[in-house]
Amino acid sequence: MHIYIGKRLLVAIPTLLIISIFVFSLQKLLPGDPILAMAGEERDPAVIELLRAKYRLNDPVVYQYFYWLGSVLQGDFGISLRTNQPVLELVAEKLPVTIQLAIMSMFFAFVIGVPMGILAAVKQNTWIDYLANIVALTGLSIPNFWLGIMLILLVSVQLGWLPASGYESIFVDPVRSLQTMIMPSFVLGSGLAATLMRHTRSSMLSVMKQDYIRTARAKGLSTREVVLSHSFRNALLPVITLTALLFGELLAGAVLTEQIFTIPGFGKLIVDAVFNRDYAVVQGVVLCTAVCFILMNLLADVVTVLLNPRMRAAL
Image (cartoon, rainbow, N blue to C red; front, side, top):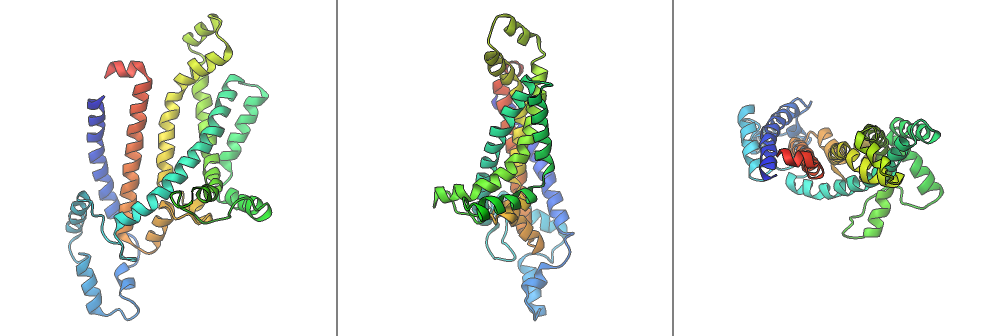
């Protein structure tokens, strides 16, 4: 297992290197000059030159990249051009918010999507299967921003059950934090639930056609034991891989949802950084997102190996 994890981590190194090159190169194509915005209305040439020298923008692009990469390897992601705050500090401030949103969203997705997928597979070609597919297609079709606005109007404005927007750290006020996160988590989780439902149903149908399932039924096992102990356990493997990808996608930041509910997460941070042409923040957030994706994929592979005896034997 250790050798397997080591090989996967070695593969991740060139992947991150390529991503860093793309991120550094593409952000240079952003229109405008952040130094002019930082220089103020007077735009004193001496101040502009001083700022360019401070942020090494006068150096060739290749030198800028290697200087930036060397700093990143030492844990220095640079300084925000707008707030003059270390990028690593901004990431550490926003990442817990996005992780909380991602975890709660995946909770809703699992609670809704996986049971629906199991029922749809067990009751294939019945009204339950058709209803589950309709609900899934509806969840995929409804835009997050529209569902978010409707929930705010109904739950917050009309009923007054939950706050319409804002965020409170779970370490400061856990109850208030959960209250502010329920609606945005449900908005994101409902779309993910539809995806999980479709994949769970497809995986369950594939497993339920296997010979060992028919053998389990022939032994007289109950439907519940066959479905949960035999079918679902084996059908869970591709669902785990999908969950890791979806979780990594959530960590990248749900831009529209965070904007609607005024949640200060990764999505809002990177949008503000792009509009403000804050190169260091864009680079730092994208790199952290790429690392999260790679770690989630690695975690999914490790869990899959642990749950699959044949894969463990092949290592």
